[in-house]
Length: 82
Picture 1 (tube, rainbow, N blue to C red):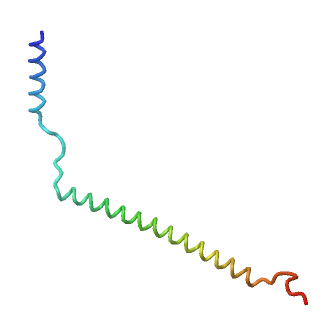
Picture 2: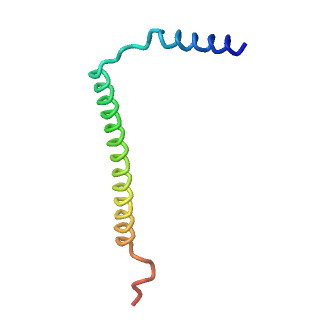
Picture 3: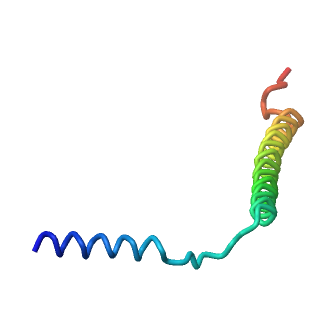
């Protein structure tokens, strides 16, 4: 019984090693093209994210300056009593 099982397992291994590979053959140029496209996409996404962060910081600073300028321009009631 063990001998038959061993022969069966060995024949399965031989048949499995002889099978053809049906995966598509991707050329190195295609792989490089895909990698460049992914890198370009990531660069664009990073630029958009950085621009968004920079714009948010600039808006916060502008709002802060506007608040300071507005509060400095308003006279405080009762502050100039002679």
